[in-house]
Image (cartoon, helix red, strand yellow):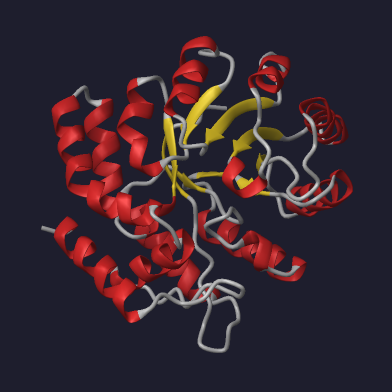
Length: 292
């Protein structure tokens, strides 16, 4: 399986009562498909996976699969705090018809690298029909998918790639250089996207695609066509808003940006609080500048 193009890390929209708004989710997906995205990643950190009930997760998976059909690649998040829980989440994701999964280290447990490798093997052994994209996001899990784990899994036929969200560009360079043809590199550090692609990334699992899918698709298309200067110009235009997103309250800002783009995504669930009026004004300023 090839990881290519822009793969929005989908927001999970909530209506005014706080319930998942499936009609709005479908509208967001259709808009992004029209913009030219290659697929979708539901139930990730941007999708507030951790804040959803199991039933809500199943319903989101069903909506995304029904709306997208065969029009894009689907990679679903399936995570938890221990191996038992993750195996349960993988099972319900497989039951929903997904074969590509994005799996991070278990949070809170703080496994060693040896334990993390054992965790991944338990998943791979239990579900030989799935493809796994490793998810390195230590700011959220406090555990890194270390190079030793990548080395141990590089020849595993089910391990197809890694979403690298550490913010450490040197790691992305090392993965892109040393594991080319083994582990596909997907950008998960939005403000470093151009650098990622220069060093071998073929896809971008992209939260900001909820806000301006046309622009990130334009970036990808320009880069893929060899127009490095054009791709750089797109990123130069987007960099102020990317920097704002990366400065904190990422989920709230993506949801607010989705609203500015015309789609009511609602507030993030507690414990996350809505943006203040000042934070909204600051974000709106860089959003409007990016639209010029």
